[in-house]
Image (cartoon, rainbow, N blue to C red; front, side, top):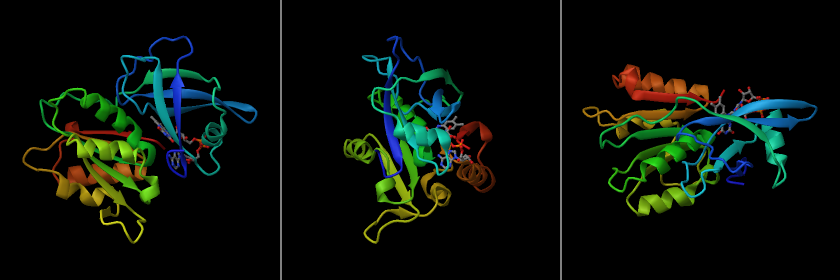
Length: 224
Ligand SMILES: Cc1cc2nc3c(=O)[nH]c(=O)nc-3n(C[C@H](O)[C@H](O)[C@H](O)COP(=O)(O)OP(=O)(O)OC[C@H]3O[C@@H](n4cnc5c(N)ncnc54)[C@H](O)[C@@H]3O)c2cc1C
């Protein structure tokens, strides 16, 4: 479990072939949920690994009444699934040395993790910035990994909690309320947004209507 409601799954293609994804893409998992074989999309949460190109990670939020997420939370270690993919166009643009801003909530951080891992392969890449919205401290997925990168000066992390404990001294509230303070309006960075529609729409609205963003600089993926 990556958090009380999110299960991480490490998968490997059984034929040993590379998954062949670009960071940001997703795969369809075909899952037996009760009597039905269902298909759902899950973002690949890891960049392609040259040493193990057949391996990849996903992370699944347990959705109340959700048939496939419940089946994936109950899946035994070693189980075999069919997949199709990779699919999708939510991938990074060339930014010529400018650090991107990544904005995610919940498992919406998964494709952003893959993109950040990919970006950091270039030792000269400027530290990307991640604005990560979660309910509470326990919901900050991959927290140790982010904090290791922050200590190494390779990532700027802005976690914002909607229901923090009294001890939390970081940002609070919805991610869209922090955009203005994080964006240099003279040199607008590309922004990559992923999560549920309500958040993605709000972030896009603030960027376009309040911060004068051109839509070509906004890249988004919606989970519902
Ligand atoms: C491109 C893409 C990538 C995705 N990547 C991920 C991922 O990396 N991790 C992940 O957990 N899910 C991801 N999803 C959502 C996933 O495909 C399923 O919709 C989700 O797991 C619910 O499936 P279910 O069968 O359990 O619920 P269903 O019975 O299909 O749906 C139940 C309800 O839950 C809503 N819902 C969907 N996702 C969520 C969520 N995360 N939180 C709360 N409500 C939700 C649906 O809109 C629906 O109303 C992605 C979706 C898309 C389109």
